[in-house]
Image 1 (cartoon, helix red, strand yellow):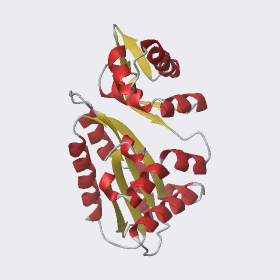
Image 2 (cartoon, rainbow, N blue to C red):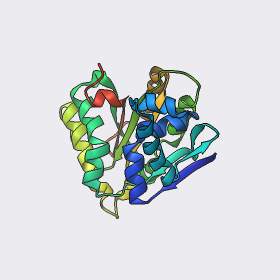
Image 3 (cartoon, helix red, strand yellow):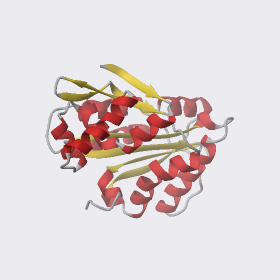
Image 4 (tube, one colour):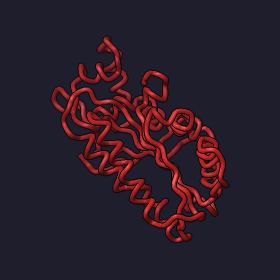
Length: 240
């Protein structure tokens, strides 16, 4: 298995986005068709096999013996639609959910005194160390794993003080606008990272630790960062 597979095809993007739970399961560890059916909540194995076949055709899943596994340890894909569509489909549900009910996961916003060089460095790295740590945790053997998503937002277009939930959503809006401007895009970051965790509390601890580490780098008003982390089913209204 290679370290990273990067896909830029619009068709592959649709498959990856639509089958995130199955892809996260095989990225965590090889799985049988029956195990994938359990993740999918589907009893018809023929239907599950067809869904897995889409991932195989996209090149992100391969079959070895009687198990399916990811073609790479980490699957990356750039957005294939407009910025507004990408934000509304993959980022806004998490930020809006946590803004209105922080108890469903973890969310924090940190204002920093980063100069332009530091802003570009942070946005380019996109918390790679944190994402690697989450991948390592996801790869540990276990049962009953649940799908969780990390959302990382950073922008130099810092909004003024306002109620917390309003500021979270305003920051997302400004970040999306900045990412669409070629002259300023390298000073803003929008990333999501989805994986299965048998120990979600440990995953949340990793996110909290990364946020705390960032907070020590200098409080200010030049750059702002949001860390958001919660289970996917909570966003869809199925969790606590």
